[in-house]
Length: 202
Image 1 (tube, helix red, strand yellow):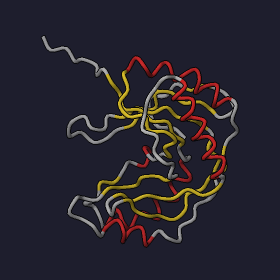
Image 2 (cartoon, helix red, strand yellow):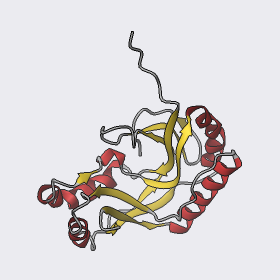
Image 3 (cartoon, helix red, strand yellow):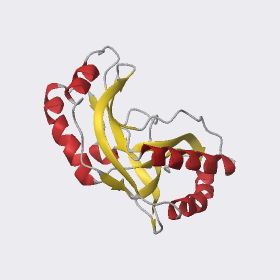
């Protein structure tokens, strides 16, 4: 008898996500690159996000401990005015879009989120905040595609948008050869109102 066992851990991060209209603006700018660089590992548009804190692999039993304090934190914050702007690369292989707007507010929110997680007793690697959306990854032997695409996007400036929700996200990254998929474990409106979601939101 084959029973599908649930994993004991889940890869977790806390993030903001742009609304559909902002993602559509950037996707239109990327359309030529989709055609000329099909070999790139393009992230799904619905998975685009701004990571505030990457927690890594956590025991499934730990996740519920984060929900009440994250809900309280979100309720005490107002939406942030942000925009997508420009592009760049990490290590010649990762293509990203930059973030503009209320960066001070974004950094404050990220700091508060990370403090909250530590106060919950959850250990994680406290990486420097570099606000961005990861768009694609190049193959290991491809050191030029990301720079070419980033150069085309240098002048891109998207319309401002309000970041209205704080997302607690789980992913299947590192679990075999399957494509990476993200799902909202829960999301909270900045200013209140909890939302239980099974997919990426805005």
